[in-house]
Length: 224
Image (tube, rainbow, N blue to C red; front, top):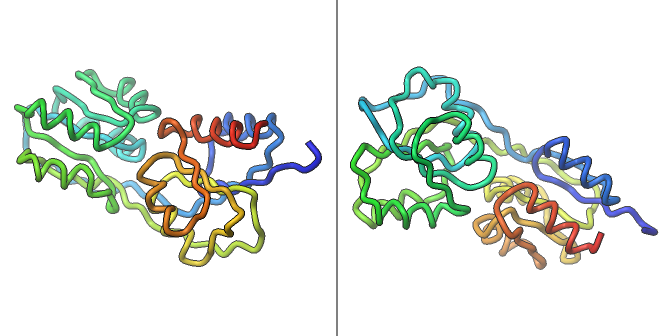
């Protein structure tokens, strides 16, 4: 390779992912554009048993700190990938996982939960689940367990590619930057891709919403 490919990741990546990029000849600059803070005072409604919706590792991390306060969960609806793996390690419950929130909503509507349904969310949760459940007439308790705060940076250099892992990161990025037309953007999923669409000429969507799939998309695109 005559020129090393330089890409920007808008979040910190796992060490294993960084090593794989390096082995492929890719130089990665990881600069987080959002900050996650776990809520210090999480209020739970009373319930002897409940069903849960967990759509991020951030929510899962928050729940780990209040595990002793949680009732037994009958069914947990979660996003595939790292979130599902963490849920399976943490909880003894029936677990239903899908790559996208819209798919979880469809399953919940078909299931018609018997137990109280708790949606563990951040302060900037997308409307997919709330709107889907409301439209389907499914009652639920939204429980905020973490806060997502933008960390805007001003970039002083260009990159061949930029990796985005959430719509919030897109919003934070564009506060002080533009995406050049010749820059390839990689989105972790369809929702992030939709957030990128007004600002990026070239958007590549990973096959599944996982960090590993984003890496694979980069490797395939640049034929590394």
